[in-house]
Amino acid sequence: MNMTEMGEVVAFLLRYRAAESHPAGGRKRRGLRAGQLSERDVCALLNGAEEHERTALAALLEGFGLRLTELGAGDYPGIQPGARVYLLLPDPEAELPPLFSLDPSFAALRLRQESKGELAQWFLQLWMLTMTLLYTRCNRAPSDVSRYQEATFCAEELVELVREQLEYLRGLGERAPRSSRVLLEERGEDLARRVRGFIELLARAGHLEHPRENESAQEVWQQTLLGAVEVASISIHHLRHLIEATAAAEEEHPLGAWLGAGSGASAESPASDTEAVDQPLDQENPR
Image (tube, rainbow, N blue to C red; front, side, top):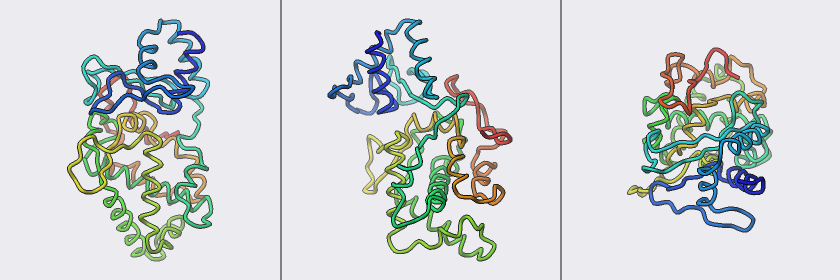
């Protein structure tokens, strides 16, 4: 793999975040595009890379605060025998860039002229409730990566969960956290539109996809292997810039609930079942 090919491999990974030599579920491999290698060629280059080439690639990605994780059929369900899966992940030991840059996140959720603090509050609420569907409902800890194929939900379920959360906040009255009261101004179809924008944002980030086989008439979403590995690897660390944007007191912020045992993300959560993700969520010292 020469330097030109290495640059093309990095360009592919930055665009798609994942490459599979034999995609599961009947997905077709991503073909050749203008100025970009095909998925088949990317996997072939990575599979055939020599040790010094892998070292150079790792050094290049390290400069972006990223690392490349390689998985095989014995690591997680859904990986075909003999296949290799390459995932581009933020490096939790590096000076991390945000998982989502702020502007695209805000643009996906903005319906009117909301402030950045208000939009950050919406993002965090939607993210936490999505984690409820993907983890708490399944009695699953973030380190339970192997169960990612079980983590499915309908868009309507997330809308209903958000509606229940808003009703709960209304019931608190003046006892509701100040940072959350802005959510109560939602009206009409705004809720469904925000949920749709949030789900599409996660899908573009490679965290959600439609299941290969879906017999339901509803719109079903499933967590991807990339999404599960990334949550287990860095958990809430990449949300700190959004938490700060809410300008709320730390003890008032609802992220505290997800950091507790209610989500399965307790300090006693088991370690991951693969060396690719070897650190559970650190509750006492989140970065």
